[in-house]
Image (cartoon, rainbow, N blue to C red; front, side, top):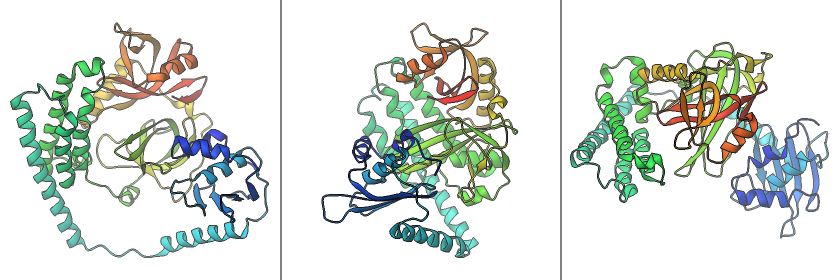
Length: 443
C-alpha cells in the first residue's frame, strides 16, 4: 500500500511535546500485535498496564482516531506510535480491516450519511430577524461603553499605560465579549503586547498605542453608521466587530474554480485556541485567498494543503472588500491540480509596488492589519541591525517575526537575490515562505 506519511507529518498531529516523546517510544513492534493497514485505516492492539491491550484505530483519510485507552489527548500516544510504525513500513498491508476497526469505520460512515440526509429545521425568518436586531443592540451598547473608555484614555493621557496593562485592558475586553463583539475584544486584548520586551517596538509604544486606539475608535464609529455604509464596507465592519458568518452562507455564493497553490501557513495559539492561516494563490485568477482554521489547544488542525502543494478546487470568499478570507467545500475532497506549473504563475514585485497593493487594500478595509505580498530583493540589515529585504531601488523593509528563522532563510537563499512571500504590515514584512528553484518552502 502506498501513500504512507513521513514521520514529520505524523508528529505534526501531536497535541504537545510530551505526546511526541511518548508516541516515539511506542513506534516499535514490541508492544504491538495484530497490526494492519488498508488504503484508509491503520489498526493494532497495544500492550498496556492492564490485561487487555488497547484497541487503536486511525482513519488516515480524515484523519480521525479511536483508542480504548483512557487518555484525553487527541490523538493519544498509541495512535501516534501506531502511525509512526506505519510510516516506517512496519505495519503489514491487509485486504480487510480487523472486525473492531471495520465496525468503527462503518459507524462513522453511518453517522455521516444520517447527518447528510436529515432535513434541517426551517428557520423562522421573523425570529431570526428579531435575534439579529437584539444582537446589534447589545453590540451598540458595548461600543458605547468602549467609546467612553477610549475618550478617557486619550483625555487622561497615556502615561503609565504600561503598568499592569493586562488588568487594565482585560476588563474592557471582557465587557465587549459580553456585548457579543468578540472581534473588538480581541483587538483590546492584544494591546498589552505593545509593552512587552525590551526592543524598538516596545520603546515606541505610545505612538503605536495611540494608533491602535484610533483604529478602535474609527471602527466603533463605523458600526454606529452601519445602516449608511455601502454593502461591502458594512460587511467588513461586521467582520472586524465579530459578527459571525455561517459557512453555509459563504458556500452558497459564487466561487472561483481554479488551481490554488499554498504559498504559506502560519499557526498561532491565543487564549487556549489554535489558529492557522493558510494563504493560497489562484494560478488563473491571479489573486490570493486565505483560509482561517480554528481548533481548541490540543486538537488537530487541518493538514491539507501544505506549503508548496497545489489543489484544484473552488474557493468561496467571505463578504466584504477586499476579498481575502475564503473557504472550500470540504464535503468534496479536492482533486489533483491540473496546472503543470502553478509556481510559475506567481508574480513577484518590488517593495514600492507591494506597498501600493497594500495601500489599495487598506483603502477598502482601513482596519486590515496587513496584506499578503510576494516581493523580490536581497537580504540585508537596517541601521539598527534588524534583518531586512532590500529591492533593486534600494527600498528596504524590516523582516519581522523571523526569530530563529533568519539563519534558515540565509541557508535556503545564500543571502543572494530572493523572492519571499509574507504579510506586509505597518511594522514590516512577516516572512512566511521563500521561493527557491521553483519550489515554495515554508519558514
